Length: 107
Image (cartoon, rainbow, N blue to C red):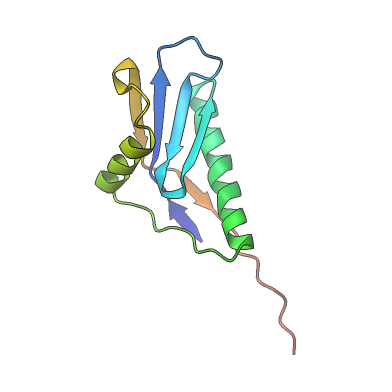
């Protein structure tokens, strides 16, 4: 199954080791990266691992939000982040394919 989850990347101006903060609000994922490309890779990994964990726990994957709803969620989740200090990028093409494992059929 393929789902597309809105993903937000904030580049901060501070000199931290990982200046790119990542939020995937529909899955309550927060991660970071040292470059923009690394931040995208970290988001992909986190989405995949969260999806697998949810499936293992028999939880349904969340329905991806529309852009406006996702923006409201990310502002709520990252309320302590000063957005005036960096650039927030909306990545709307983050596609992660999750394989759903099915138990073998018994005849």
